[in-house]
Every structure is written in structure tokens, then in C-alpha cells.
Image (cartoon, helix red, strand yellow):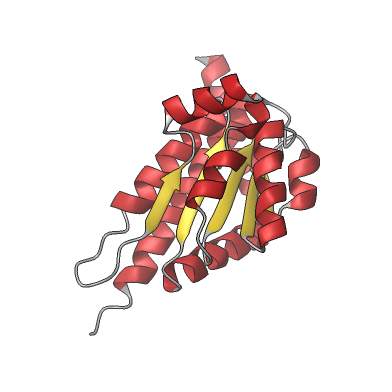
Length: 190
């Protein structure tokens, strides 16, 4: 139990040290995407792929408010046949950018999640998105890597321990989905 308690204490400290100003900027970018009826497109590898899928689900489900438009969200991690086709026929680093080229519409926002901030597949998607003028958001750890340098808005989980970085990202995604849902409910007439 000591190890579990120590991990949870460390995680709580890391969450507390996560820069709140960055989170507010991310939340505002996602809110602006909702207001212009854009789609929030999310990608990541490994544990970050699971976070991407989970975040897309939460945005699509938790934010529903009768009488208001729904949040448009999708995870590029969820079409395994397309991912495998691109990785087999070209290179794995193309699995997200090729899907993004098919799905992107003006007004969309790309959320790129990478613990290290150096995943080539995620970087290629953000590079292409930036070239198109897409709003790009990053969630990283380990000092941010290349992803933090190229995304327009981002947050770095202040940790160099992957499980902790992934837990911080998941907590951030939950907080963002809850916040967006509350803002949508506030649009209802009194």
C-alpha cells in the first residue's frame, strides 16, 4: 500500500503543478471550435491513443444538452483498418496525417497527445494542420518535446514518469469535457 499511496501523492502534486493558464487557453480554443460548429479531432499513440479515444467519447456524450447543438469530436485512433493500411502502405508516421487530410474541414481543431512530445505520427499531423491554418493543441510531458514547440496552444504535464503523465492528461481531458458541458448548459435560456 505504501507504493500506491506514494504514487497517488506524487500524482496529486503533479496535477497541482500543471499550469492552469495553459488549461484555460485550451478550454477556450475548444469552446471556440464548438461555437463555430467545428470538429475536435484528437490523436495519440499507445496510452495517448486510449486517452484520445476516451476524450472524443466524453466530448460527444458528457456535453449533450437538450436544445443545444452537440459537440463534434472524433479520434483518429479509432479506425484501425485505416491506420493499418497507411502504416503498411507508407510509413506509420502517416497514420494520422492521412486521415486528417480526409476529415478536416475549416473550423476544426486538432488535439495532439504525446507523453514524450516526439511521436513522429503526431508531429506529422500537427505540421500538416499548421500548414492549413488549423488550430492545434498539444498535451505532453517530459518537457514537451518537439510537439510543444509546434502546437499553437499546449500544456506540459510536469513529470518525466509516463504513467503519471498519462494520468494527468486523462484528468485534463475529463476537466475539459466537464467544463465544455457546463458552458453549453449555460447557453439555455433562464
